[in-house]
Image (cartoon, rainbow, N blue to C red; front, side, top):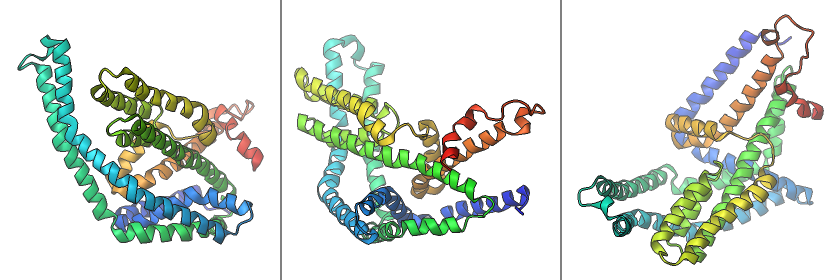
Length: 370
């Protein structure tokens, strides 16, 4: 006989409280394990495909680890230093960019930028603020990350944790499944599948889309000759998970820089704009349908809220766990709403009407699969 609902809520509430306290108390200690778990989760489908092709789990894990180490070495030696240098130079160049912008406006709209005008003072103030605060913010972030993720964590613990978790992933999932309470195991498995589907569509799908688009933007902008093209491309790719925002902000920044660098060379400016147009076409018609699909994802507003809350409460570790927690909460809320729609509290005493609501229909395919 199952425990009363009141007792179940008490136990699950205690478990959630222990999780939050552990996340807050351990913080930096569990960071490499959270990173390693995220890497293992991201790469588990690759290992499964290699196993389906005939490789053992150990061989599949070894192949993935080898390629991962090679990619990391290339990024650490070539891409990351260039990215940091361009970001610092971009902050230092901002005052000159604003001065050129002032000269541009003065030549065409002299009345707007008279000595002592509000617009002129605002542009000067913004430029000085970005130069002083932007560089300081970047240096602080790099220093914080350097103190938070030391060399041992980055180069030893995280890869080792990811290797062992990836190797034992299927076994760990089976062990967790055996520990589920028998009365609720079917429902928990169903919810776990939906959470995994949401995470897979967002983290694996959108993560891959962001990586592909960021690489495309960076390489294409550098080939065109745009200064700071690597930074702009990386920035645009990083925020692609928010629909249209990545292309709009990245495109505005790139075109703005192109106007100052290539003024009069309209072909180069058109090429910069065309890069983002092509990127949006590829994302909307190829990448997102193929890699993300039509599965339920995370709403951008809900994701930003979760990142803000968990980041402020638990720091960098909180931001890492914000996405899976937000996905789990979203799935649980949809389940609770579907149960409410099927309850007498919602339907009242009229039990002759149809029991299945619109939200219930969204669970029909999963129930058929079960």
